[in-house]
Image 1 (tube, rainbow, N blue to C red):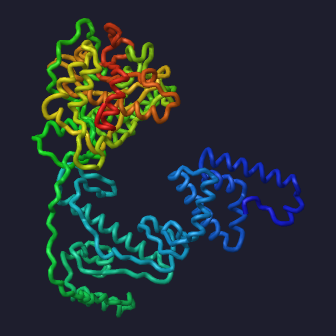
Image 2: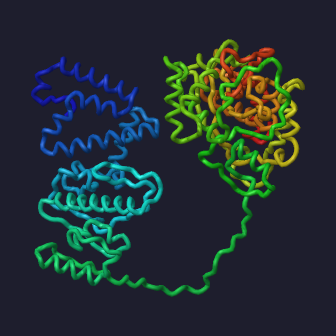
Image 3: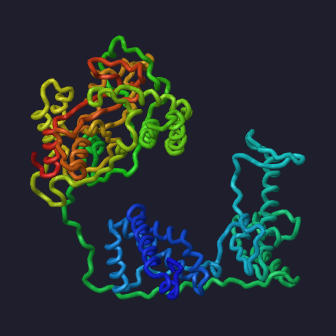
Length: 594
């Protein structure tokens, strides 16, 4: 089967043939390790297996089974992480256990005897012994916004609003097209046509119904059932169809049972554990902003990234940094932020033609996140940020120099917090995180003041129990260190003044960070990176490998002209929480105590 050899050729081939087969098997084993089980099937096909098997009696059945087995083995290897030896053992176990799971049901080797479902358009030029037309008797005619019709042989599209004459012409042409399609459908049959007719609101518009009324006869609003049946009988008498009336049988009676005595509805006496929830950074903030009513909740799976804030009381802009923002004229809002995130996630900064790469990605993602800006304008505005300096956490480096091989985009995470599913007992709150910030951050740290906000009010009382989920925009590997990066499209401008790099100085960005609770997000994402590296990186050392957090306010990143003050470029807020703080926060989330 796999090699095309027979008993005679095997006997005659000797050691040379054995060595050749062994080399092929080793090659196929390498394919399986590198590309999966399907690669073996593909290699065997290229070696002529398909042609040989299909030439045998029952070969189509055998090829279908081989393809089915390849898929099952490939799915199992992917799901369970099995190698070839483990797959062999799994297959032996499945064969010995037997069973009738749906995945083991043999697939059809051919659909030649199956009913084929297709549109009338697709069926043009084809022939079938028997054709079934279940919907030819009616046609829904919507009220069109645009009417397509012909005027003296010229194809026209009516876009100037309702016009009764044009609407009638368009409907007449559509009805004629439907009649022609009905003719095409009925003439596909070589031996028999089975068509259905039933009274309905849309019945007068159907092609079969127009045939029923006679050629050229205009459609009437409604055909009484008795009249329709009489016309069908007359059509049958004239040598037309053979009628089979569908009789609707009465519903079978449902057996009733006597209700046993002593039954009553069960009362719910348990208390709902409202502290347990599946939440995220944004979910913690929303819970603190509501009216305090607790409830078991779950975060939405897909949300827009609303980075925009209009009520930030920012400090004055830096002087002498009035480089115009490349995004000064671009819109704001959640959809715009989501589009920018999506483009930056998938665009390859090492592309030979980065402007073309950004343009292609903008066009691809704009279908999901439409905004009122041209793809060319947005792609052009995103280009300068790739040449902007990244500041002290990545000295001398720009985004253009960090390829996809050194990026971990959209690091999704979900992990249980202290307390798990157990009721009662003590569990951590955000105020405990505030205490850790106060203990580990020096007084001159730009985020030191955030400890007070976490330690008080509704935000501080938020429980850290249940599951924490989210997604880190990107992790960059820079010189052996790993940096958490979050893209922000916040507008930090003042009034109607033109947006410039001065609006994204370090002090103003720090104010925006504190206002929007970004320090909490940065710390939680640092914990995520810490846990990820501890699982994946050999000889991991938090003090060595944790490279800090960069918040890229993309509207302030102006390329090579970006102003740099005291080593901090506009638009890039760098913060390096101490490794001890990250480790203590991770322990707090995991154990309820630092």
